[in-house]
Image 1 (cartoon, rainbow, N blue to C red):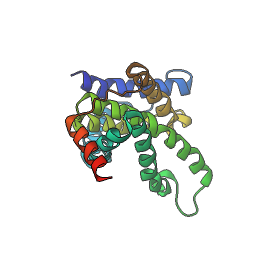
Image 2 (image 1 turned 120 degrees about the horizontal axis):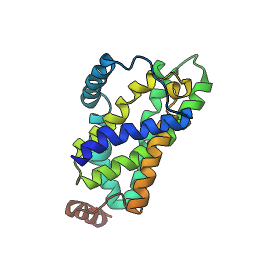
Image 3 (image 1 turned 90 degrees about the vertical axis):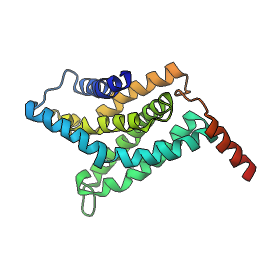
Length: 208
């Protein structure tokens, strides 16, 4: 139950805190009515199954993370995965959705891309920690990923153009959560090497 609370309450609350910090006060939103919350619920379900979280996390946290952790440890593995994750998303910044592509204003790319690069690290830390604490349970990891992505719906209703058009509030809010995780786990991110990872690591050494 505590992980559902973390996913559905703490994560959105942290991102909202980022909005408050960027805005300088509690931000105002347009059209946060019953219809919005119904849309939010169905969007969460759609993003979970059809968006990035499900297929991405099978690869990133399901396949790559345990192998990287057994070789480099949790923190270095998370840093490496964050870099790979960033490059994976680069083509997205050349789409119309990000106002990219031929003939686009490159100044927007210079704004959005650095913010996204910064964004990948705290999210990676949070997802690694949740993966390790749940003994490799991808369902919780995918839920957290979907929760982060779905909260962008609230972003589009903001009356503050900085909040509406950039993800800097996510960097601040989730950066705070990631920092607390690093402090309280002393950089270990809840990692305990499993028997399978030991076998994988030994097999890697034998093959060299």
